[in-house]
Amino acid sequence: MAKALFGSVVAPHELRVAEENAALRARVRRLEAQVAVLQEERDATIARELLGMAEEPVGAPALASTSA
Image (tube, rainbow, N blue to C red; front, side):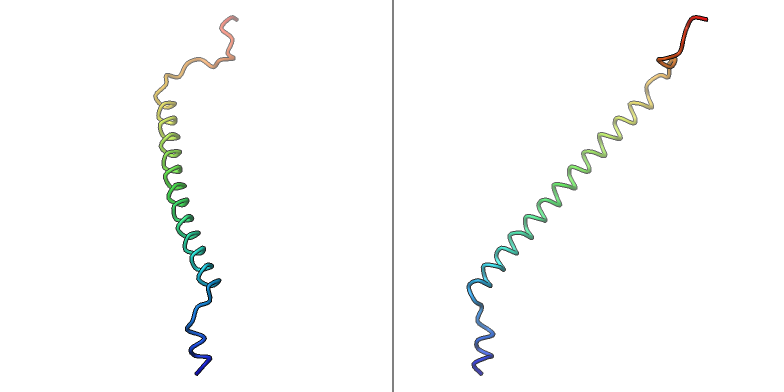
């Protein structure tokens, strides 16, 4: 019976580890959310740049010679 009672008691260092684990998991969730936002911003920027390139008029190549 003593083992059963002892097993239900959590040692202070185990509580500290559990609290640190919960804090780290929360930090990982925040960082993952931040990464998702940054990826969306990056994708939107790339899309704008690609659309801008598609709308630019196509001219003569910069290295093309105009004199014959």
